Image (cartoon, rainbow, N blue to C red; front, top):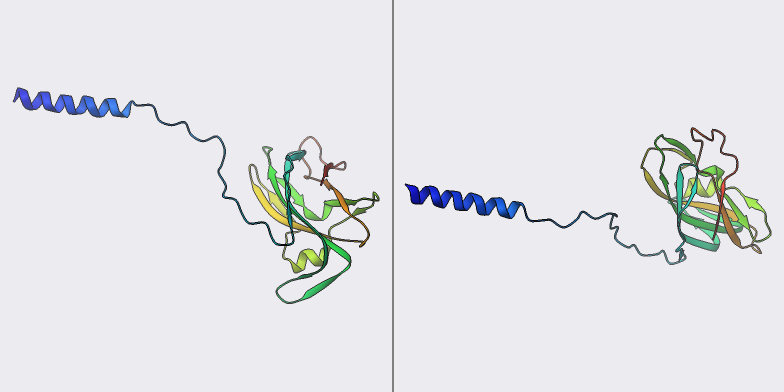
Length: 175
């Protein structure tokens, strides 16, 4: 009987020692798998930029697109389409009403261009959405700019915050 009790105590002690072994530290960042860049696009390696409680990460740029194609139509540009792939993340504690229509493309002559509404509809990109606390959304923006211009900056507007209800200034992000 004593021998069995000793064997049980040894097994329990060994199991307890194994549980006390230090484990590997938890990762501090998400490991997202890489994705293929679209054929007409250049991958961007820019640091994130903030406007209010919204963080912008620009990840892809395509310029000089003569037209875009949706599920039911091909739509020609008046000049050239510019497409920007971006990720927006809410870093604040409240929701942000994010408006894609406020994002302005600044060209090499200093002119600003709002997104091309018809192109956004054809490509089924969002117009406005509630960006909740900690939420991250990836999408495309489309502009139609003159053929002889080059895109140089995104003037990004994150949306109203508790400390800046109007959000009129925006943040310039060089492409």
